[in-house]
Image 1 (cartoon, rainbow, N blue to C red):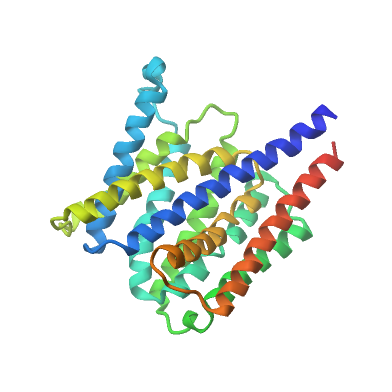
Image 2: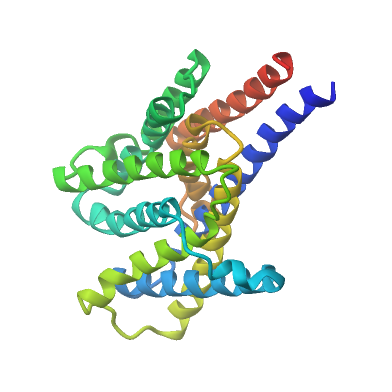
Length: 295
């Protein structure tokens, strides 16, 4: 009985961490809408504060083991940071070269790549329920944005799709690194460095006002918290299930936007959101039940 509960408890705990990470990221999405500065300027300062906040957190949480921070970083930690940083950088031109709705739906295909890469590299089986849940979640996101999906550019669509592939690859890295001693928290530092690079290289970082600077600080906090929660939870659940965090983020972002900014979603958007939430709840409940039944 104890072992059976341990398996379901681990899955449930990992799912909660991943969902909380998604919630934290959705706050970042809303804060971006409240900024007034240029895209690369906001990206630079958001990532700058991400690096600063994470470094302070690491220094405090590992103050008795500071030597471990200086140990050589593992290649998988670097690759994870490059993938996440690449997602952050590519997302900006993706939004500029296609519709926002189209970009969100294409990024919402991340669960497909998480599942496929998890099956190829980790040998994780893709069950019928998982396939149905992923299909329902992506359909839900598509319903949320409806006709706004049409009219995007090919380049923007490809960039948005690339972020989904990067996300899936990063999930597999996190899963494969579980129990190996790799500290993927440090990969968040790498992703921050990658994200600030375009602004520096292109010299497109302009002066920023106090209003935006405060918002960027909070974005750095919510983004860092989201990564820490997500990286911790991703090690405990299958890659396919972890990928569902992307459709979930779209739903939570829409809800928070309605509350904070006052953008009331359409009836179809509500239907799509309910479909996504239902699919994720069904998946968690079904997976926990399976875990208990097979132990």
